[in-house]
Image (tube, rainbow, N blue to C red; front, side):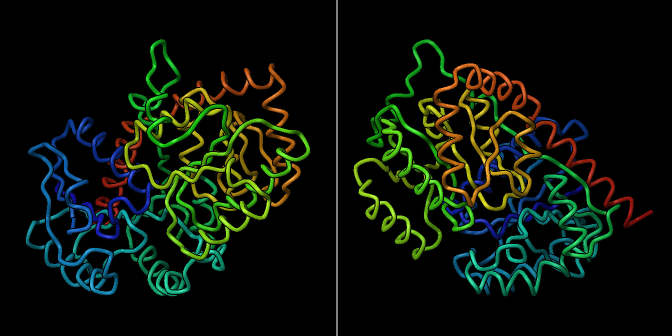
Length: 385
C-alpha cells in the first residue's frame, strides 16, 4: 500500500509525549515493513528535521505553515491533503494529530489521542477547546478507522465522538527498551543529573506541564512529606510549560511552601536518553494526572526499574496493570501517604519494581507498528470492499 502519514500538527520540542510516540512508531514501522509499503510523511518547517526516516520506503512531503501558525496550517491541511492523495495515488492517509482533512479521496485513519477538550476543558486554552470541538468529532466520524491507545479511550471515543464501536481500533503505545532500562554497573546517569543541577535522592515527575497533569497536587503532597515526615528527597520536575499562567501558579505554590531549594524545574528535555537517566536516578516516580489517554511515562519509569505512584483516573489503572500504587489525584494527603509507604515499605517497593519491569516489557514499538498496519488494512478494506 501507499500510505500518507500526517504529522503536520506537531512542532518539535513542544510536546514530549507526542514526540516520543512519533519517533518510536516511525522507526518501528521501518523495521517491520516486510511488505515494503511506501510511506509519505506530511511534514512542515516545524518538524521536518526531526521526523525523518532514512529508508527508501519513506519520503517527506512538504506542506507550508507549521503549527506555530495554526489557522494557516489547518487550511493547508484541508486543501492540500486531497491534492497529494490523488497525486501520490495513496491508498490510506493516517492523521496522527487530533484532526484530519475531509474528502480525501482514499481510506483514512484518524488517531484520537486526547479528548481533554470535552473531559477537562477548563485546563486547556479556550481557543484549542473551540477548535477541537469544531473539528475533532466530524474528523473522527468521517474516518474509516479511528485508533485509540487504551480501552478507556476507546470507550470515550464511542461515547463522546459518536463513532461506531466496530470502527475504533485499540493500538497501545510502547517503550523503546534500547533507551529505557534499569541502572547498570558503570552507568553514567549521574553525568546527566550533574548537567541539570540535580542531586540524589529525589522524587520525579515527567510530563509536559498542562494543568490537567496535576503537578500542583504533587507539590502540595510533597510539602506535606517535607513538613510532616521530614522526607530528605528533592522533587524534580522534567517537562516544558505550554501554558504560562500555570507556570506562575506552580512557582507561587513552591514559594508559598518555602520549597524553592527543594523543587527543581528542569524544563523540556528532548534527549530521551537523558530522560532515562532521570528515571534511573529517581527513588520514585509520581504521576497524579487527572486524565490520561495512555500514560507512557508510567511504562518508561517501570522499564527503568523505578517504582510508580499514580492516579486512579482515566487510562492510568489500565496502563499500570497492577504494577503501581494508585491514588485519588485530588487527595494531597493520600498522594503523600502512598509515596511515603513505597519509600519505606521495602517488600512493597521491591514488588512494584519487579512487576513494573515485567509489565513494561509487554509494550514494544514493533507491536504498535504491526497493529497500526492492520488498522490501515482494515480501513482500506472498509473503503474499497
